[in-house]
Amino acid sequence: MDTTTPAPPPIAPPRQPDLPISAGAKRSSRAPRKLIQALVWTLAALIGALVAISQVNRAGDRVEVLAVAHDVQAGQVVKASDVTTASVAEDPALSPVPAADRSRIVGQRAAVDLRQGSLLTDSSVQSGGGLGDDLQVVGVEVKKGTAPRDELRPGDKVLAVVLPEQGAQSTTGTGAAKSGAEPEPESIEATVKAVGRTDATGSLVVNLAVPTTDGPQLAEKAAAKRIALVRQPRDEKR
Image 1 (cartoon, rainbow, N blue to C red):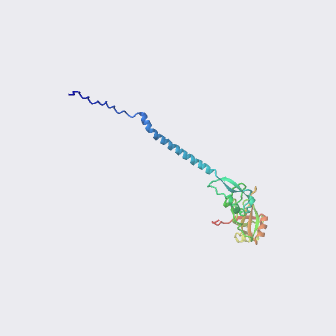
Image 2: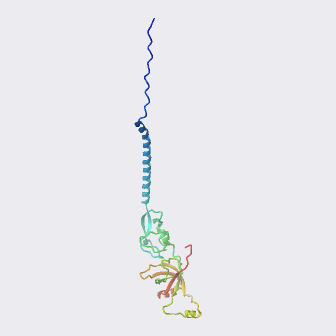
Image 3: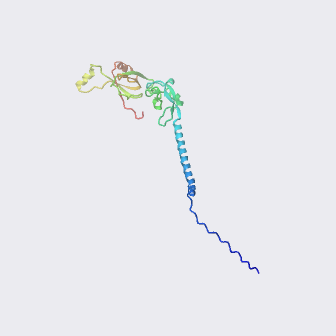
């Protein structure tokens, strides 16, 4: 009879206690989050740089426009030699005439005095003379104080008022003085065709268009420097 005693079952080793998560493990778990944040900031900075570069490039875009090559007085016809091209930075605040519209500008009349080097705009010129061929043009030199300062422009309707001669008294004036009524001054209706520059004395020459019946009389009074100009009310549509 076998009397061998069976071996006792193996004793399990004691269970090791759970260890706390080490600081290194915590740092490793936070590393991907920091990496993502760094990538986001880098991407935002890159986008901002691209936007800035795009704006700089756009500001540096240059366009060909029309400029004044020679001084042109108001009312004069703009000739091909009076116009040149200039390259300027594109600016929404400016509205110069594109160089491609050169043929449209040449042949029109200067609406204002055009200075050499200035950019041309659509308001700088006007089509045609607007006066017709049945009118006479008289150059009138007006002295300082006998015309509105910086108010006259081509197309304006004016009254050319005839001034009395110095020391002279008309018979009309004498009769009016006796009756107590002020006489109406003699005047001629005219249209401004061109306005010259004011000289050192304050005088300037204004070209006036008048009917053929008034041209000789206006020329005679203008030669005697007896003309004062009064601008009529402008049409609101002008």
